[in-house]
Image (tube, one colour):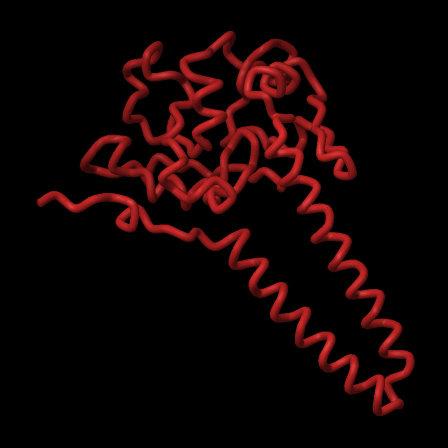
Length: 211
């Protein structure tokens, strides 16, 4: 689970509708994952359980309600914890409680991750504030991070096994074993990628048509 710097561009501002109509576009722009905890929508039941996040809360910044540059993608849990919280404007050095803008700050640089335990720790005041306010060490996130580590370790072990098999590639039995092993792992990785990274639902799949 890693964060992504969100590339916001004013030219992408839709010409019609309001923020509720732009959810699919915002989801894709934000890599279909929460900008705060980095969990992919597939682990939360799909797009229905994600929200259009008003970075600057619309209750406090009414003019930003439909400003595309202010709109991000958040899981329902983080969005509920954040609600209309806005303690301070962010600073370049993140030295006070605030929410750094996900389109200006790569959140990977805000946190240290202990993958073996699945825990994260904020590197500065702003990051520590977000960690506590949004409960970024909640049980589900810890489990997701540990699963991600196991996938990474699995990939490493496969690579080591491939190298060992290469050393005995002249032996027919080992060649056959290598071929079967790599085929199975290729299929596993394809399925893993589909489960982790390919959105399971389109917005139309979870929206009842108007009769």
